[in-house]
Amino acid sequence: MENNCLNCTNIRKVVIVGCGFVGAACAFSIMQSGLFSEVVMIDSDRARAEGEALDISHGVPFAKPVNIYAGDYDDIKNASMIIITAGANQKEGETRLDLVKKNVSIFKLIIPEIKKREFNGILLIVTNPVDILTAVAQKLSGLPENKVIGSGTVLDTARLKHELGNHLKVDSRSVHAFIIGEHGDSEIPAWSGVNISGVPLEKFCEMRGYCGDHTEAMRKIADSVKNSAYYIIGKKKATYYGVAMAVKRICEVVVRDEKSILSVSSIMHGEYGIDGIALSMPAIVGKDGVENFVPVQLNEQEVLSLKKSSEILKEVMENIEL
Image (cartoon, rainbow, N blue to C red; front, side):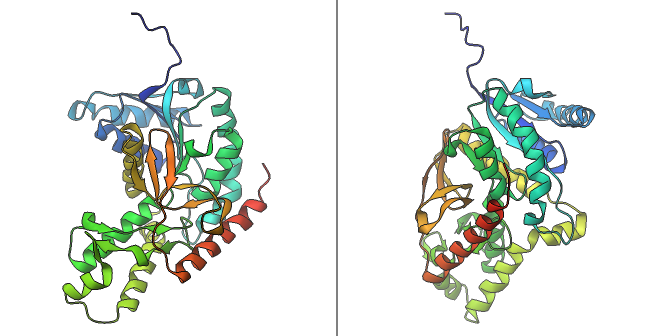
């Protein structure tokens, strides 16, 4: 039977809005993944989008078939995901929250264009400050909250696993840990629930012969994770490879309906006494976006730190005019 549904969602079509370092790296990572058969790249600088799409497409013969091209907002129709990376870059000495006004203004231009096309797929926000912009994108788009996801602390969590893996001399993929709260200076390592393949962190440390100051070691690791972006920006002016891999992982979970647990940013309603603020907590993610938050083990201090993180974000949100 002939299929005349021109606007049916194509689960294997993705749109990337913003073709700077992060957007291009995301497109490159996605091309290699084989997840999508169609990748549309949109940028205010059309020539930049065309150049990036052409450059990446030349690698397709070494990967799986995919059509990568520069487009415009009309190409959003029937896409299953839109990834927004457009925005001002974080400069050396600048916090993610310093980018608020500039990038909210950019989102006021982008999101209405998406809304006009009656997009109803998954909107993945990568632009910083990602927690603030996730909430802004949801309000401007009118999409259901579960379908507007921020990349949140997925990368920060990977950084924590990397640091712990190095410290313990164990495969980082065997480390189970989360960074929660703001993707930024008030982020919190959820130390209470960290385990290495089911073995509690402190016990594993003892097993590996680390009998020194456990608290000081955790502090150093947490600081290293929190300051990773600043360190990289100081060295090479931008970060983009790590976040591109994080974006690819989120796309995998959505496209394959994996129902994996990721520390994405989404709007909370009452969990830990936090309401109406988007921040990162472990959540089950699948084809419809965020399904449920996962109540990870937190001690009293971690809960207080999480609430403080939410208050910082709430104060910023209250000063944004939409």
